[in-house]
Image (cartoon, rainbow, N blue to C red; front, side, top):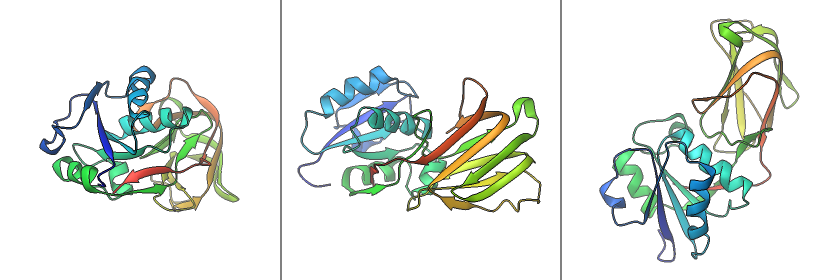
Length: 225
């Protein structure tokens, strides 16, 4: 980490605090940080030259922070992620966990990666999953860019960000072989369904949806690795 970078820790929930972060200014927050919790820290971070925000939590914690950064136009903040245990986002971005991740958070360099969001304005960093209502099949169709992912009834659909362009990939989930469960990469995934339950980074949506789009935001975010 360069001498001009100033780190701040957002401690989401109650994961252990690595020793290397004990001297860094720390802000406690909910496991999924609220808008108010994010804004309180952002107001301090925004007055600092070359800030680095270290998110100590899980994928849902990081997604909430990125969502708020996107909505408040603060994607110029450097973001380091320190999960206690392995997560989907950690696997996608090839990140360490615990004390090793904390060391990288303090010494690594930030670089741009695609930011994947949906049409509700929420970021996803690990996995978004669509399933049918009440355990039933997901009925409808989906496309990744111009490639049809499925049409008809499937067990579900999984969407994940990628560390490089074009930004995301999606596949049909479950045991059915009709669509090969192949990953299809692109800039956007569009789903139309009779009814679908959407879970973003382990957090269930509040209501069923009939249409949903995940796509690459017009700005990247700065990930420390």
